Length: 462
Image 1 (cartoon, one colour):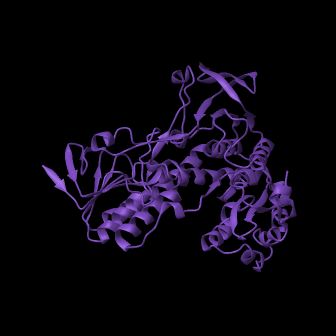
Image 2 (image 1 turned 60 degrees about the horizontal axis):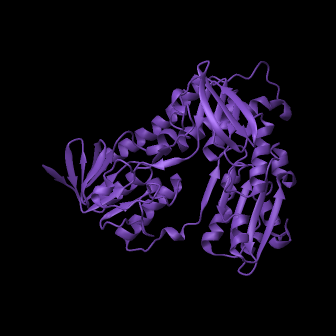
Image 3 (image 1 turned 60 degrees about the vertical axis):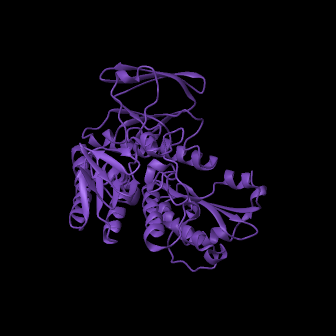
């Protein structure tokens, strides 16, 4: 016997619960189907737990630097990984409890546990039950991938999910991948006290960023004792003393690294391969992402795809914005589109990198006339006061329209102050609005107007 709903939401990641509640409040009887745990990656093994652990790692780092501030701590600084994990689990538990109560307290939302699979264009099967609805929203997220190295199946390989279960400190953590997830774990566990080695296939870190950003991030992390190997090729893995040994070439030279733990942080793939999409006629691209239009509709009428599974964004905030776009178009009569979203994200190392808009490479490739401003944090009074002078602030401006094209703020509080530029970009206002603003002293953001007063033509830069 089939159970009919007005709407079905598959997956309870960032977009799913908000959309299910919004649909229910609009008068639609809604089923929210979840396979494993409420909250998706962000709540369970992504943003919330990792940033909770980053906070613990920073506390250890600041404690070790206490003497720099005239503070004397008698005795060694010790990290209790069981306590770190317990704190993380408590924060995650609070988030899940709040989400669970919200869903159970919302009328016309049925929370159904199990794996969903399409059995027709308008129905899914979950644990032997068939649910049907004229509107189905796919929000199934993604999962970590592994490098296809010979022998890697013979050792235990950690990913961003299984790392969250560790309650003992790795003696030597080998991380495969020098991008955002890998670098956050690298600094975090180095500050906890592990030796950390990063193996990167490319010739620099976070390759999508400008070269000076990559170089400065590398310098920051190397100063903390993290070891990097670039141009990694021909890697082979063997078990070694309960851990893993990786033999490879790095920049053409032999490289041999043995560690107690091996973490793969080489990318993610969408959870779309076991949903019965092909049987329902829902199109996917070569990498498995669900093909959607600018309003997140699939090729099948009545079916939408949100979050990581659609390949249009890989962040919690883009997933939430997917929900906003769908809700606005479907329920509010307001036309909202993915193309109107300005790229924005952060790398949560310390100091963090706040990024919005275009990189310098993208600006140059566009052929437009542009201005650029670059300021090292050694010139920022607030950074000197706090002993946090690593990094720089960089802004790119369209010379003709005076619009802000992009920014990279690799600096103390860069993940927060970058929004002062992002908001102006959404407003379509001239950078002069920020340049003439009177900011509070002493702050980091007060130097952004100064930076914007020192712009130079981009073509004059090396």
